[in-house]
Every structure is written in structure tokens, then in C-alpha cells.
Image (cartoon, rainbow, N blue to C red; front, top):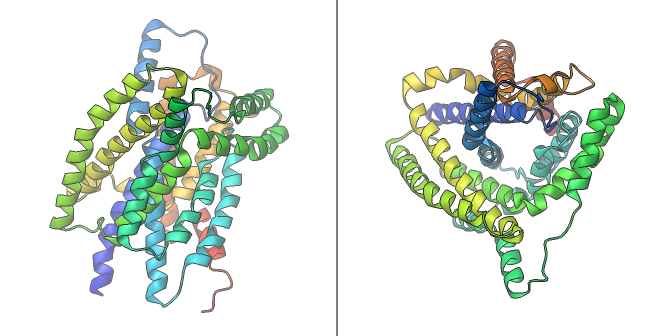
Length: 391
């Protein structure tokens, strides 16, 4: 009984943090019109200024950070599932591989309405690292996570180019693929739109992640989340509070210099921007992610804050359902096959649409979870994960 009581606060803060990440993702995706960059041709000067401020603010706060939190908590969830099975004398590893295969199906569903491909498919591919490291020691997990997050591939390309100027990054034709996907979206044929998204769109997304350094970054975040779970650092205690205060202080101190160095590097030639610039950009975003996570976890111990963000806990418990339905809703709002409102929605209006969608989803989550233990897609994923299990 004591173990169950001690585990409850940890689940709540993780659910709320996951809800925060998905909320941030939906706001960013709405500003991007779900990767359909069509905006009003003419707007009043004051609205253009407001739009630019909204864009800068939302992207500075959330772009690249919400995804990182989402990935971090994916690794944490793997720890929970692995630990639960290990307590029963079972190895969760092979069941996890089947779970990843099911996730590929959900990734395809989401990608059907999201022209840029889907991060869930990247999670499926990179998730193999969790299977391979599931029995490693805590120290090995942490060291490997750090090595991945150092972005060694980017630095290899940078140094190789330094010694041999003829060395170039592989040309994966991602730009041409995205242009073809955008043209299909603009044409407005629903059938072609779906097919192109789940084929060419997914391929473009996976290849974009190669030169963007996302594979190793995602692997590092998975392992870091796995490590945090093993150390039970989301469980409220004085010792863990001090840990998160240290994370907050270190992340805040690191962010400024890393951001300044990134800005300086981005003034260099294109190759340096694509290699060293990519690494520093990820590092400064990771530092800011540390600020967001540490602040959220630390403040969540306050009853006033936890009550204020209570809706995020419900939202996070249905993160898969919310993540996929936001793409469906967004595509219907902005794309030519739907309401085609993209040409009439600047950044400010798009942010309001995203926030209203979020609020509606929160209300739906509260209603659904008052009647069910899991969200609809979460229930399907859970049931299919454990199909064939002996009771």
C-alpha cells in the first residue's frame, strides 16, 4: 500500500508535464498551419507587428522544447512499463517491440492529416535503442544519453569538412519532397492528400531528421527519461526538489551562453550552420527544456500551481488521442479539402484557434475520463499491446 501511495504524485506530475508538452505542440502546429505555410496576403500594420511578436514568443518558448519533453517522457514511460513487468518476473522488451509496431500504425494515422510526416514514426525507429539498453546499468544509460546528446554526427561532419573542404552533407532531396507534398495539399484532393502524406510525407520527415540531428537527440532524450525514471526523480521529496533546483540553475546558466554561441555560429557559412550550428541550436533548446521541466516539476509541488494546471493532467493522460485529433482538426480548419481558412489566419488568429482547440480537448478529456480509465486511442494501444497475454 505504501508503494502505491508513493507512486501516485509521480504519475500526476508526469501526466501534467506531458499535457503541457502536447499543449505546446498544438500551439506551434497551429502557428505553422500544420506545415501548410499559407497566410493572409495583406494585414494592417498593427496586426503584422502583433503577429510577429506572437510567432517569436511561441517559437522561443516551445519550438523544439515541447518535442523534447515529449521524447523525454516516452523514455520515462518505458521505465514504468519495464519496472512493472520486471516485478512480475517478466521481460517487457519483446512486448515493447510489438508496442512500437502498433505505434507505427498510429503514426500513419496522424501523418495522413499532417503533411510534414510524423514524429511518432521517428519514435518507432529510435525506440529500438530502449529495447537494446533495457538491462543496462544506470551509469551506462546516463553516459550513453550524454554521448547521443553531444551530437557526434554533426561534429564528425564539421571536422571532416574542416580537413577536407570537399566533404559535404548527404543531399537527401528533402526540399523537393516537401515541395511535392505541399503541392498535393494545395490541390485539395482528399484521396491524394492522404496517400501522399503517408508515403512521401513520412519519407521526407524521416530523411529530414537525418541532417537535423534528430535521431541521436531523440535517442539521448529517451535514455535520459529512462534514467530519470529509474532514479524516481519525479517522486516528490526534499532531496528531489533540490535536484530539480540544481537542474533549473544549471540549465538557466547554460542557456544564455549556448544561445549566444548559436547565434554567432549561424553567421558563418552554410556548412558550419548545418553542422556545428545544428549542435549548438539543439544544446540551447535542451538547456531551455531543462528550465521548463525543472520549473514545472518544482512548482507542481505547490498546491496552488497543481490546481491551476489541473486540466493538463487529464490532457496528458490522453496525450496520444489529443496529439492525433489535433492534426485532424487542424487539417479540416486550414487545408483546401476542408474549411480552407489558412489564407485568412495570421499567427495571432491561429494561436487563438489552437488555444480554443486545446480548451475543447481538455473538456472532452475530463468528460471521457470520468467514464473510462483511458483515452480511446490509449485504450486501443493498451489492449492491442497485451493481446494474447495469459491472465
